[in-house]
Image 1 (cartoon, rainbow, N blue to C red):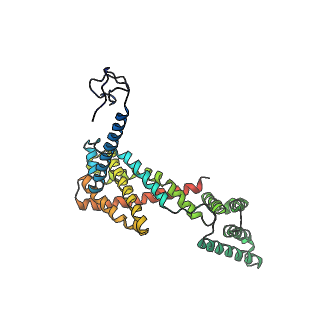
Image 2: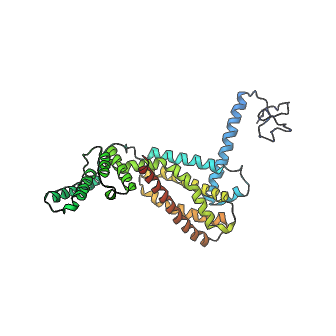
Image 3: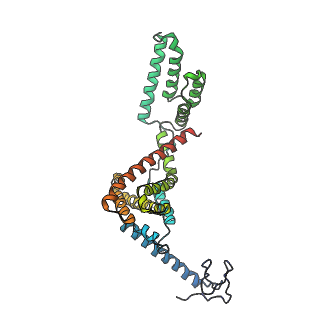
Length: 334
């Protein structure tokens, strides 16, 4: 393939450093004439595409069929042969969440509805409040407990009557009317107020709204969990003497595989229409993880297996805590 002519000047147009040969030793730019023909533009386009495709396909080959070896290749210094781990992770996660959004449910989770189960719970709370009010009217409550029971009944009425609007404001007003010693703890008041605010806005669809918000922020949560996963690897394989960054590369490669495998699962589910597929996919992902640990850290299969159990348990706990913290923040932060 015909290449562009070299410039006679031996100074880089990009950074100004001397260029003894075809490429600048400082920034890597090719020292060629700036006037390109259309043929050169087309040839560069195909060279770049085929070069990236070959790297991408080779990276996927190692990622899928040689668990853990891609990390060892990276640590051995073979960086240009494969796609950069962070770029591959960002690209893969973007495609995964895009496909998940396009193929998921398209009902509006923010449309105010009242689910049957939610309505049953509210009706039960409302009935309890009515019984308390009835006991007050019949004089079955001691005089010293009348104020406390009446307040409790009013709170249950607000929380249990779906027809009540602005229930969050009413609940807060009732709490403020109580003496400080009888008020619920501040965090419980804050959480309950947020629940009532969401119920006022979304009705029984509140659970779907929470799920939608969690899915929306899930990529950010996963990105936060990557360094935690690498930290677990460093703890469980501390005797290997690896730098934390090396464990982070393994973490990125493994999570990239999960997203790549998830993309295949989404495509397959478009054919079979069975969401149970996603639960069964956990088994091959776990098997891949064990083999990846064995190959990357050069340990026995039994060692990789037992350590993988500890890592998965700790990671699941960490994921649950991060998800719970996210939900709590959604309620606490107005």
